Image 1 (cartoon, rainbow, N blue to C red):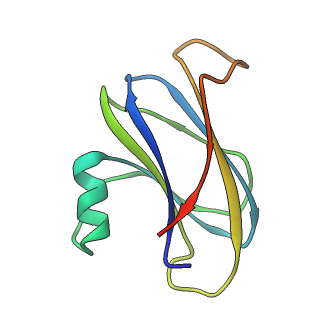
Image 2 (image 1 turned 180 degrees about the vertical axis):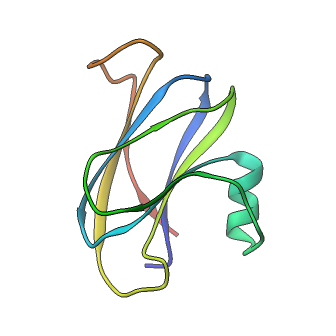
Length: 104
């Protein structure tokens, strides 16, 4: 697996993203549309998140726009599976958006 991602579509600042994982430790990053294109091109990019050992990983949308969750193994061998939930601002339990990661 080079990387897996989930397209969150247009999100609003302050929404919470929860990524549930099973398998190897991995990098979980949240990027906007511009930075996802930079990531895919192998260019420098800005992100929220990092190397994760425990699940779930909780991240927050920084600004209104189109967002993606990306999971990669940082070049190491391993397997990871995951799912993504998005909760609107101020909502603790109800999930508005739910989906699985897609390998690229």
